[in-house]
Image (tube, rainbow, N blue to C red; front, side):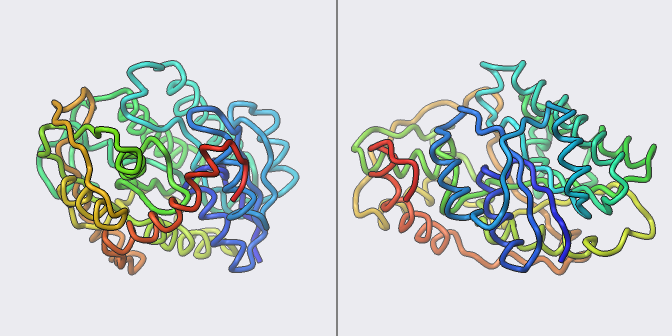
Amino acid sequence: MAGIVITGAAGFIGAHCCAALTRRGHDVTGVDNFNAYYTPALKQARVEHLAAQARVHDIDINDHTALTALLDDVKPSVVVHLAAQAGVRYSFEAPLEYANSNLLGQVSVLEATRKQASVNRLIYASSSSVYSGVSTVPFTEDMKLGTPKSLYAATKIADEVLSDTYSSLYGLDAIGLRFFTVYGPWGRPDMAYWSFADAILSGRPLKLFNHGNVRRDFTYIDDIVAPIVTMVEEAADDRPATPRHRVYNIGNHTPTPVPDMIAHLERLLGRKAVVELAPLPPGDMVETFADVQRLQRDYGFAPSTPLETGLERFTDWYLQWRPRLAGGERAL
């Protein structure tokens, strides 16, 4: 089977992609710098339990020499670039980290990929945050994006422009994926569903922004990974006849009020939340809503996991992981 390189392999989506592709017989090599944006112990545990069959190298994508050497050694047919500095709110605190990881890192990956003759396709992570300057829903890929409301959103728009330029200049087949509020087991502690679950179990107040008037297109991790696997396998053995750059929304196409998500967590955890109403923070969006017709047309994508089902799977996992995280253990 094909050789695949995945950056951000210890991250939430990256580790799940490693697991899915190795199960299907692909030779997967991962790259991650295990940074401390959230606990590296969780990242290491993902590698040990999800990506155990993949080789994951401790390499920063901005170490262009090391990244290029790895691609020269592996000679992958597809690169899945998921490494990035995540988080809208943190971008107000640490803008240089976003510029370094999301802008310089994107160029490093693009440059290394376009020079590697074995690569048939680059698939990379964008974000629903690119729509932060848009007021009309659902969001479609051909909308004019407007002025982004956070540096994080700006870096993701820039990533798409950079990728489009590389595709045009060098004939690189590139796909950008605009992820919509991904959740599930082995997720990220900075995401609302995780922090709300922790607050409910701890008896701490949780902040409900915009006084509860927030809707999110929550997308279960399996519904994110499935189309990525299809895109990888489509290009694994054959270089596309007409290399080009295009973007796709990957979302559940079902925006849910955040108070409804909290109610699901209360039922699953058997405890009531202590809720504090708060204004909308800078950079946050009131609603996200993915139009996925393009993905359905080209890849037959159809989200299949209801929010309640996905949250049940998350809480089952989280109730096992949480005490070990608190105790500082590295693995489940």
